[in-house]
Length: 203
Image 1: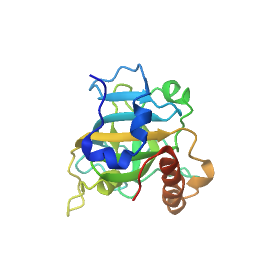
Image 2: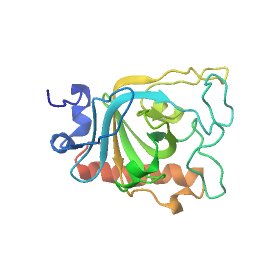
Image 3: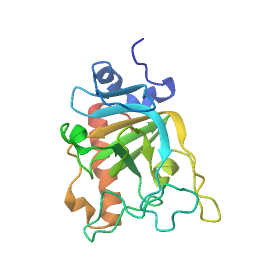
């Protein structure tokens, strides 16, 4: 049966649905098989998965997340890491060649859709080579799922299923990463018009 996006997300996807129907599958071995993992006709990477929690870069870790690491793969100009609790970011599996060959680099942006919620995020961490679908505390928050407890520890739980990610190759720039405030502004200002031009609905 051909891939069908979740009906609750069709409004957000808009005419991107037509492009998904023409997508080319990505032949990468993923342990938990996504409903789709493919390249859209315009080169964007699209996948439909659960979204697991990645708290890397959160200064107060590892409370609640045994896989926490102090650093993220992406860094600011001063070499500091991206804070999971303050910046919406997503993760792609390594190794680098599979996504680099499609024009994607650390710092590029994506649109993430869960039901009718839409968030924009930055590619800030490289994950295990067979794991697809991870995001930061702030990304989950923007998608309607809070994972931070009142005692400043995390509920180590993912969200979904049917979280849709559309990665925009070549959308990030090193100038966007002078600091957190600049990055947060750039994520929204850069990814939103790309998503709209692709056919998605932001309203």
